[in-house]
Length: 95
Ligand SMILES: [Zn+2]
Image 1 (cartoon, rainbow, N blue to C red):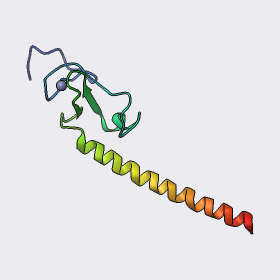
Image 2 (cartoon, rainbow, N blue to C red):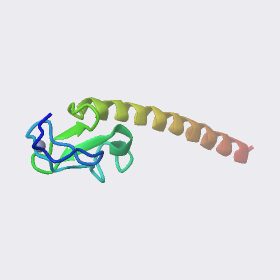
Image 3 (tube, protein in one colour):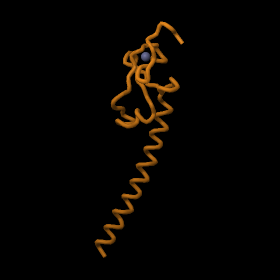
Image 4 (cartoon, rainbow, N blue to C red):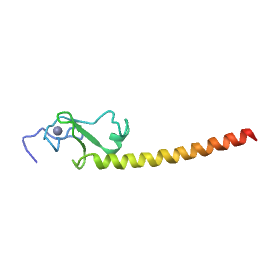
């Protein structure tokens, strides 16, 4: 830990790639929308655009995959339920 750095808070960490203190939580990402980066604790460097997991400082790639996988599971389950409901409604109305 570098004693000359600004004190670390929950919101401000330094970038693990370029050591810039200008990191922020992205408001919106292509892979997780608004919720994804909050759930996974993703932070993004304003200087080099590096995305990483706030807790571990590791690259966000794996967290993105986990989130996308979970999202796909949830959405396909949701799609299945809606699909079944639609089929049921159509079947019920034509009867
Ligand atoms: Zn950086």
